[in-house]
Length: 139
Image 1: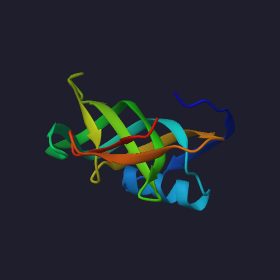
Image 2: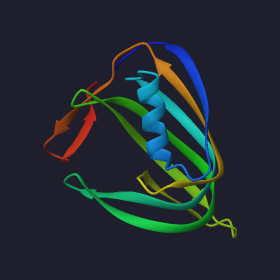
Image 3: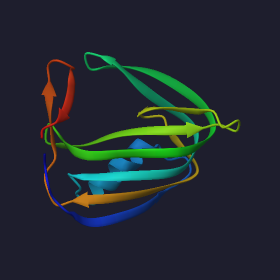
Image 4: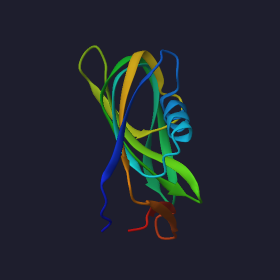
């Protein structure tokens, strides 16, 4: 277990055409964030989501939009001394079918995406786990 407090809150609107993961990485870089959690809502033109299949590998699915971001949640930690975004996203189409998975590059903002970032006052780091092949939170 790791304990700490929220030291600040950052709210940002990602512009149409922005890749969500790239926008998040720019936001955390500009604000020197190394530990946080976040939520995002909005819409995407298209998306790529991943499903963990084992040994550090993901299967990907590309989705055509427009799609509504039902939920996007994640955290920021340090992986190999660099800020790292780990997030999952749920998306709905016009028939209210919902798709989701690991947020990957290729989730392109449609009209808007609103991000609320809660910055932590503690360090979060990830270390490689040989059993899963993933970098897991070191807690």
